Length: 112
Length: 115
Image 1 (cartoon, rainbow over the protein chains, first blue to last red):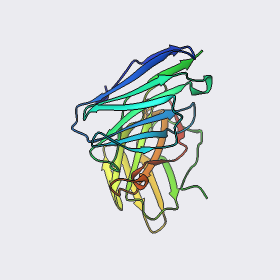
Image 2 (cartoon, each protein chain N blue to C red; image 1 turned 90 degrees about the horizontal axis):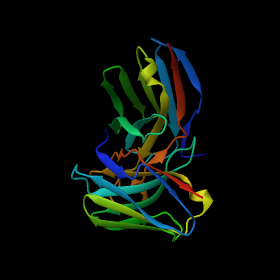
Image 3 (tube, one colour; image 1 turned 90 degrees about the vertical axis):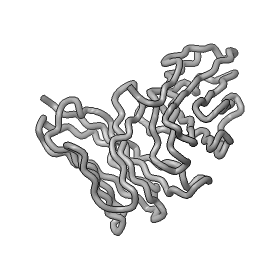
Image 4 (tube, rainbow over the protein chains, first blue to last red; image 1 turned 180 degrees about the vertical axis):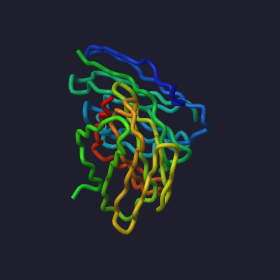
């Protein structure tokens, strides 16, 4: 079991739906991250939160909207996604930004 | 030249073999050097990390960093079928805030250990 918990594990949604991915860690880490991973590729960084503030947005389309309600939780709100957005979405955390990161097992997202 | 280069394999070895996985890099600002193991349909698991240079050992695993050559290695001794996974190297510059603290991943090497 990982120390970063992601829900749901699987999600199938239509292009007009709105859904949210959730991530939780209780390691006291102050940096949290969202990544997208396609098959046979390394993870690609989407967003970084540092001390609950958005630190980095890697030019991600506005149909992805991150939120950090507190130091333990990270959400990714999804709206009007495209089929090419189907991927494994990974959350990670680290003690502070730049230090080694711990990943969850991801949410496998399929867009119909 | 990419910042981090890693041979994607696949690499197939018999059980009990010594496995050597390697990455090269070009950015001399990297200070954290990490190895992740990713099983199919799972997230990357932080296997080992080294700060700056030197070696680190944990059971059957040894991580080495040679900053003068910009080369890192992961050795797996007495490899087991359960070691079959994709191994990703990753590096970061560890400068608080800003993009230099981001992880830069290699492409990953798919390892298969045959019984």
